Length: 218
Ligand code: FDM
Ligand code: MG
Image (cartoon, rainbow, N blue to C red):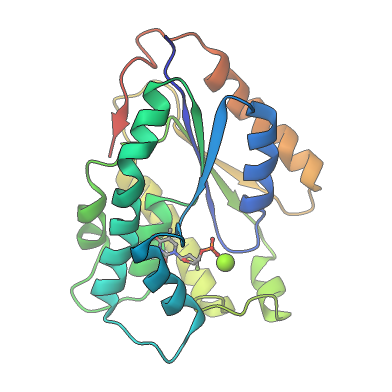
C-alpha cells in the first residue's frame, strides 16, 4: 500500500498558512488529516498556549523551546501511524518554526545547533512549503496580532532565521527539492492555492516507488 505523504506549511504569522492548510486538506480529503503546531489541546500544549497568551507568564527560553519540541514528540507516533496507514498528513508549522522562533531570541548559548537537537528523529516532511510575504510586518504593525512574538521587529528576525534553518536542514540525499518558497505578496488566496496544488499534486500522486517507500526523518 502507498504510504501517505507528509506536507508542511511553514512561514511567518499572517502569511496564510492556516488558510492554505485548510484548502489543501479539503482537496486531499477523505484521505488526509491536518495537524497544527503548537497542538494546544495536549497537556504540554496547554502550557504553551498560556505562555503565548499571557505575557506575565515567564519561562526560561530553553524550557519553552523544549516544550514546543516535546509537543511535536507527543504527536510523532500518531503522524507515523497515519502515514503508514496511507493517510496524507498536512502540518501547519513544525520543526522549522521551532528553530526559527527560538533562535530569533538570541539567547546566550542557545544557537540554531542547540535548537535543532531535540527535534532530531522526528518524521521529516516529503514537501515543505514556506509562505513568505513582503508585507507581513506591515500587517502586524496594523495591530493584527495579540500573542507573544507578534511584533514586527521580531518577525523580521524570525524571517532571517527561517532562511538559515532551511539551509542547515537541507538534505542533499534527495533528488527533488523538499522545500519550496512561495511569496504570497499581491496574490489572492486562490492564486496561492493554485501554486500550492502545483507543488503538492506530483508528490501525492506519484506511486510508491523507492522515493516514497520509507519515511524520512530529521
Ligand atoms: N512557535 C510555534 C514557536 O515559537 N515554536 C514552535 O515550535 C512552534 C510550532 O508559536 F508565534 C510560535 C510561532 C507562533 C506561535 O503559532 C503560535 P500559531 O501558528 O500562530 O498558532
Ligand atoms: Mg499566530
